[in-house]
Image (cartoon, rainbow, N blue to C red):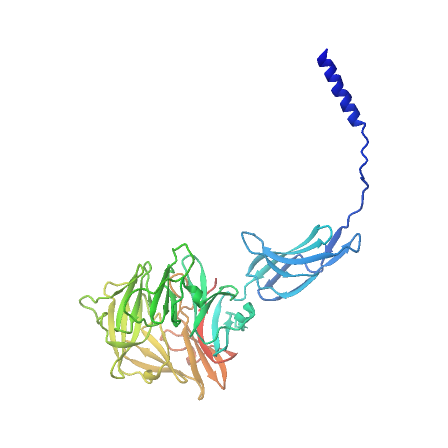
Length: 478
């Protein structure tokens, strides 16, 4: 009886609750709906650093509400990438500086009162114009620039300023493009007072020279930076001292303190194949040193060596890669204008492999620019407006090209793959020369024949419109 009474009371409570009149305000009000349209197609294709112009039209069902607008580019894959804000307003007219790749270009209109956001999305594919070509450093002092001569012959000028909105650091003298076994490509500019590293795709500045180190050295005087042939270790020569970093290190990519020892290292270096090994020349004691596991050790010549690695007793003028694992080293007698080519084999047990006297090489004592062939036993050198070719076994040089009178050669570089990670169809078959003619810098490209001479005894291409050319470096496709 009690249970039945309880059930009846519960039923009565439900009925009374259902009869309660809700006095809330439930009048329906129309919302402001936005329609976003554009005459620009939903898929946009252009090159990096092109100017992009996109405009949208907005229609409101209830005109009058105020909105804020934002244009954002974000990675199509959206894997931990930073979004780039391109502008505010209903239109953008800007240079897009994002790296090449696939992106969504997102327009967002947000009601200032309601906070409701409406979107319009475009697919955006950005291609690289800086993938491959000759990097040209031209100009002097604080008036320098980097340009890129693309394989199709077009010239992208002043790429650093375009990417960064600022001038190139002053007094640059060397550009390097280096590749690691991890697939990274690094672009460096060395200057008399430091340098800068750049993104390989866009030439955006990454780090100033002081930030290449855990602790910057007291004296800033870079002379070279290079990676070994497998791209597993990096070496930086500053003020004659060697700084080293193994790329297997998972921390920040920074160079440590200089390697211990009493030495002054030449900027001419000898990358090796195995592990983190490399060979250096100590100008203080005129000897060769080898690197392994963060230590420098003097090289000792075994019996039968062509020369004494630990006591060369001559001044190193130039060194460059040759065929196989050989390097050509041009030495000068300390007390006379006599020259020699010592050839070292970095993969052999007997590294001091060959020695040649240079018997007849016109003007070699005045030469400032050299390029060692990676195919033949030859070294090109330039003096004034003339290019000579030294035949090492023949011990003499011959004139291979003469520019018109008044032209001054200011740079020379052979197209040679750096290390084992990169190859070119014309590897060791193209040499570029920077020349100053009537205060205009020009870049000449020569094709190399099977004898080492230039095809048709002249240049194949010429590029004009530069200031004085200081350095040249080929940037491989990446």
